[in-house]
Length: 72
Image (cartoon, rainbow, N blue to C red; front, side, top):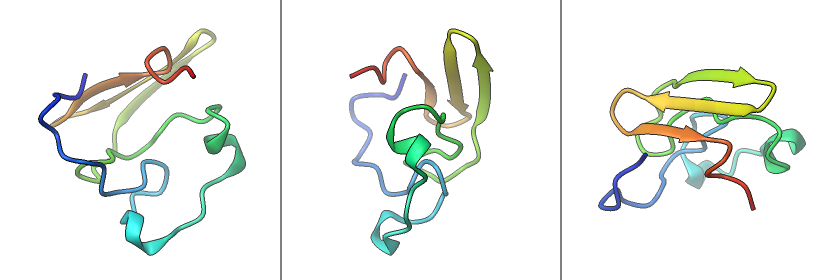
């Protein structure tokens, strides 16, 4: 998981572009159906594993996210 001391996200986790650019996000990503592909903190491409029960995404610098931690 991402450490608590990590600053606010700077990059769009679906496009890898800076949040300030205002890049639109696909509807599936907004609904939580698409896993993030880029780290929101460093914009590195993440290793993503999708299964019938959810997904996991791992950044080599900031750790792992999963669909369970993203449930609303």
